Length: 255
Image (tube, rainbow, N blue to C red; front, side):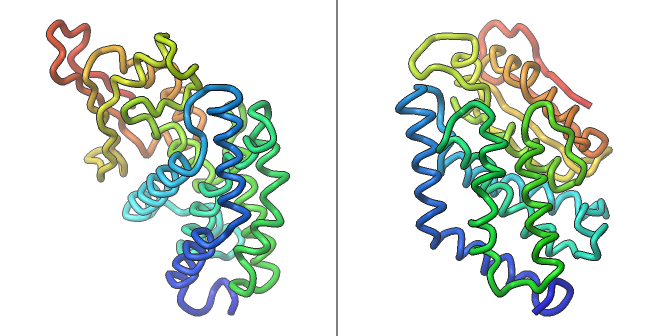
């Protein structure tokens, strides 16, 4: 079956099942957390983070589709359904490089991913689309690096989805577990991140916070990630602080 024929939704379901059943991928996720939590004593970069990014990435892609935003895979004759496979696999693999080291983990993820991709895509795509899909996934994995420019919608989605895993202490700014720093305090302020269809732009991201310290998460990390994602013209961001007795700021917006 080639990439343009058959039921591509079934392809995504098969890929999801293969991801769930992969002992090698699960081993890398677990090893990534050994590096992050046990050795560096920073916040989670393992299976929980990965699952959240997979969910957020697919949600972003589907909201963009509703606005007829074309994914990068169409440059190669692929379809929206193929873009779902790219986004899902890139989210699954984007942080596996932590199993080797935190430093340059994006590049290390690119090195570890190809053999896993060969296994996860076996029999689902014929050449040349199979190789093209692997290249597109690797681009999205690499481009979640802070200083890398995403050249596709799929890669921009991974960059944004990675940064959006910030609810209740899950900040993407690495902070030392247990240390009361601005990174950890602001991370604990994020109560809820909601992705909905926007009014003026295709996507609206709304962040609910328990206190104003949460603004640090948005202004020091997410704002920069969004500006470098290539998706800024499609996404509005707002935030509100709920329950704080003395509010430094009532609302906050990007875009």
